[in-house]
Amino acid sequence: MSITILAGNAILIEAGLSFLGLGDAGSPSWGSMLRDAQPIMREAPWALGFPAVAVVLAVLSFNLLGDGLLDFLSPWARSGREHRRSRNRIGGDLRLPRMTDPTPGVAVEPAEARSQRPIG
Image (cartoon, rainbow, N blue to C red; front, side, top):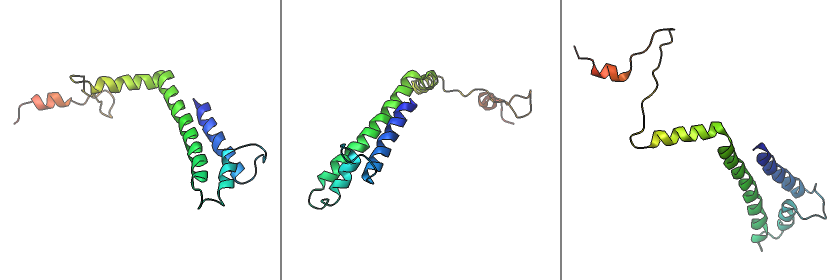
């Protein structure tokens, strides 16, 4: 899943370097398209907007792809998702686990037992 993050970073680095003029002048690049559109920005703002939107969408799609793959393939993320689903069901078990006092061997009384104790 980290390969998708690296792919997004590679797109940003390549676009940034070619925008600064450090890329290959003969190859088309979103960064060089942005650099070439800068002087005509007032007359043709779409010439600057389309490459910028393309960079943002490409990086965002790689990041979302990595996030989706992580949710699909990771057993830890899947178990957490199942836990959230079971907790949100109507009639699901919403009780918290029994907590222990910082002192070893001494248990804290559950809230249910405290509420059923007679007052006085």
